Amino acid sequence: MHMSAASKEVQRVMTFCNACRYCEGYCAVFPAMELRRTFSSQDLSYLANLCHNCRDCYYACQYTPPHEFELNIPKTMAELRLETYREFCWPKGFRGLFKRNVLTLVLAILVCFAVIFGTMLMFQGKEVVFSNHTGSAAFYKIIPYQVLVTVPVTIALLVLLVVAKEFATFWRRTGGSLPSFLNLRAHGIAVTDVLFLKYLEGGGQGCTYPDGQFSMVRRWLHHLVFYGFALCFGATVLAAFYEHFLHLTSPFPVFSLPVILGTIGGIAILPGTTGLLYLKTKLDRAPATGKSTAMDIGFLILLFMVSLTGLLLLIFRETPAMGTLLAVHLGFVAVFFLTAPYGKFVHAIFRYAALVKNADEQILSKL
Ligand code: SF4
Ligand code: SF4
Image 1 (cartoon, protein in one colour):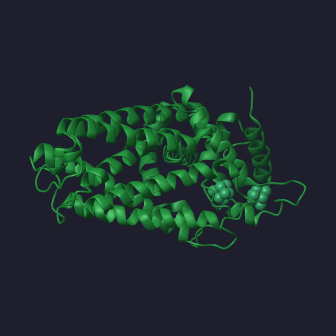
Image 2 (cartoon, helix red, strand yellow; image 1 turned 60 degrees about the horizontal axis):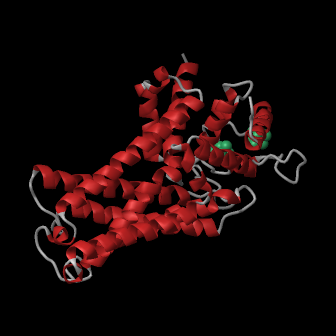
Image 3 (cartoon, protein in one colour; image 1 turned 90 degrees about the horizontal axis):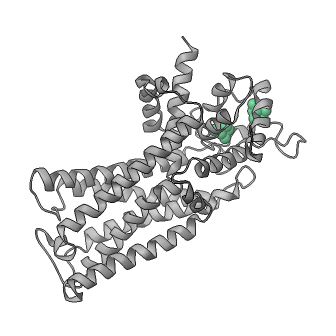
């Protein structure tokens, strides 16, 4: 079976590690590796997505360059991980978006802004778009209710379909079975790992990221981004519930639950994404692959802009700037979701699948 250069390198590295096993307490990769004697391409794709790039093994290993064995696990795993993002992407014709991720983001932003703004001006006229609208249903005076519901729901269903298909491809192509997928205990363990970011804790001192010093900063910043995003998502779902079941019309008061959750979430995302971007500027490049840097940075900036424009819309929603800010915010939100299956967001999908598979394997190995 054909193996890419990145797969062969991970295979070489894992064969060394399986004999050495010095790093077995660092993360889930090593216990998973120890369940195998040989490594198929399926195993390697799975292990690459189980690695969360903490770099502990790089700084601990006596065989990293300049040693002649030249083991560099974080870099090798990251390169294979990127390959899996492209390979398991759906539809296949969109693979190239991973390589031109930043260009894709910029074009998507321009197109979304042009479409939203153009449609608003064409159908509502600039007097309406640039006027002051207050009180109940103010947003719907700029963008009609039917449009504001139909378009996001269509995008959400489309993204959900693509993400489900990518998850299923990852599962199948890494050797996952239906019984493993249906193992609820494994899902429970994986969800707990995600909620507590267990592996970013390392051995209690955090990861050796961005350099050789142990630090919990990356973990806390990830928590801010993760829970910030979850709160914003929850706020949107709650707002839809208020509208459709309680018949309350947005914009909601500042002290209503959707606004409070969205505000806390948005505020959490700002330092979370800024901090992660700052850590990237301090990164020790030796254990990194330069191939994903642009994609990582593009994703963080996009998330930052979604959050910032959402907060600005909240602050200025009773001014004539509301129409413009609504268009800009919705533009960033649309780009975020439309590009999610073809960028850094895929990490969340494949990482979760890898954690479930790992939990299932560990449960079975103890029977
Ligand atoms: S990374 Fe190096 S020290 Fe760690 S298990 Fe592999 S070979 Fe051993
Ligand atoms: S970089 Fe971290 S997560 Fe990846 S294999 Fe090494 S110790 Fe494990």
